[in-house]
Amino acid sequence: MNRKRLLITCVGLWLAAFGIRVLSWQDNRLDAGKVEWVIAAEYREAGTLISQGEISSYLHNLYFMTHPPGYAIFLATIFKVIGNSETTVRMVQIACDAGAVVLVFLIATELLSSCTAIIAGLIVAVSPQLAYYPSLLLPDSLSVLPILLGIYCLAIARRHPRISLLFLAGAFVGISCWLRANALLMAPFLVPITPLLFKRGQRFAYSGALLLGTVLVIAPVTIKNLIVWHRVIPLSLGAGQKLLEGVAEYDRDNTLGIPKTDVGIVLQEAELQNRPEYARGLFTGDGIERDRARLTRGLSVIRAHPLWYLGVMTRRAASFLKLARVPLVSAQPTFSHSLRPQQDGDTVKLLSPAVLMETASNASSANAAALPEDVTTLQLIGDDSKYGVCFRSKPINVSKDSDYTLTVPLKLEAGRLLVSVTSADQKSHLSTTVVDPLEAVAPEAQPVQVVSLPLATGNDDSIRLVLSNGGAKARAQLGTVKFVEYGPTSYLRTRYPRMLIHVLQKAFVTACMLPLALVGLALLIRARRWQSLALLLIVPAYYLTLQSALHTERRYVIAIHYFLFMLVAISVSFIAGPVVAWSGRRLGWKTESLSL
Image 1 (cartoon, rainbow, N blue to C red):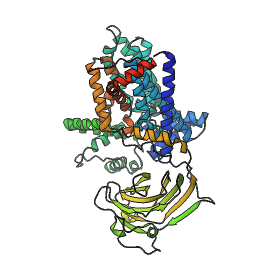
Image 2: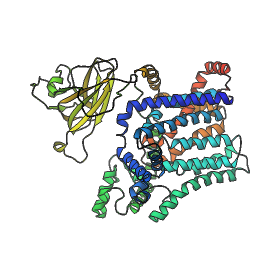
Image 3: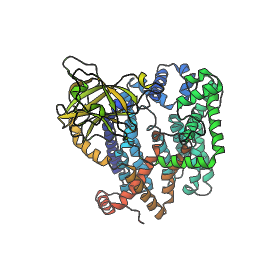
Image 4: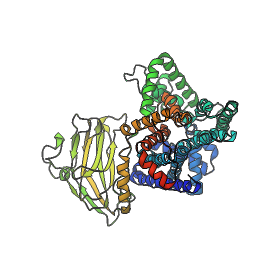
């Protein structure tokens, strides 16, 4: 592919990825701030302190040591240069993640064929999982970009061996560590593939350059920690906590006596050490020593039960290969107004349970008889099924292509409640949220939680409010629902691209993508493309082996899927070989294919 076509393709992929991620953000913008909101608030506070020049306050706050400083500096830079806006941060993250799609294309171009590379770029661009994470005020998607840059440097270096490229590869891994500590040992993990990439006589120097690049980039963080806290801490704290929770989450019968949550850990430590101040947080008191004690405790359990923990790591690693269930891009434009206080001119209705209730269709035994109109609270009791319906309202008339909010007061006494607004026929969900009871609060003392459900009606002219068990039998009280009309929905012109993207994203399930990735892996092995195989598998192998030792959330290991989707692209290219070859000849692409 010549440079002009390469540039056009890169720009096209970036625009496609950026557009899909913006649509995903539009759909999830009201809920994205609720994801790990405590951690996001810590990052925002740290970024604000740095942007305001209060460096000492940032450096001497031990709680900011739970994360490397890179994301706080990233936020501070945006706050200082562009403005203190969460929307701006998300747009920058979306732009960077769209750049990651271009890097996937460039890596695949180096390792595979041009057509396969374009397919890989399109798959990564469309993936709902990878499109969703840049909307969160967290560094997870951002930390993948330098890892991809590092692998791209290695891919170029195999054809044009230069020690500077190896140094850059290590430096990019170090930059990723500034954002998330998960890649701390990635550079040593990359060293064993150098014999596959380089000739004898080059390997030692190139491996040293790779390690040196990472060490030099990470060193300022380590030195800062040594100066401020007088301890050797390579990046951040928290490994002990994650290891303990990683051990506990597979101890089904609690035979090891290790709590599964942060709250449980601090309460146990406060009791065992007779230090009440420990209960205030993970790092109150002598926080560094506490985290090291957790690490020691976790390692002692692993040494006592090595085979059991090897099985734990195997099961956890297998879970990394599963695609997370994230919201697909909606087939219809979503709620576009800002949530604001009620204003004059808004159409507001108050709907009591008696008005909402349609006795013939309700599943709850509490709704078996008609209610008096003055009843303002209804007791809901779910059935014994995981997702059984507790309450289903009668159809509520609405205007098409308009924005509304339903404000639902709920007192959840037990279980978990799934609160949804659906079309009248319940074939489509317009808005959904999950309500959990407050921890360590008795059922009778649970507060009333006011749940706001923004929605866009699309082509529907009537809707229903549906309350269901959220995986566990729910018991709750429903109050009077407030129903507000905001006005016409914006961005109606996005309806047709949304429909296409929504259909394509339905294919992004583990049962579809994992077999295709395995076929792509088999094709690479059959073709004896050992260098390509090593470069595509080394990052997934790192997370599957080392990260599986710790408690892990899906967002920690999303780097795996960028590379697995490249394997999927190989399968798609092979299956659609004749069409790909014809298109490639017409456009002048390199179209060599892999064959079994």
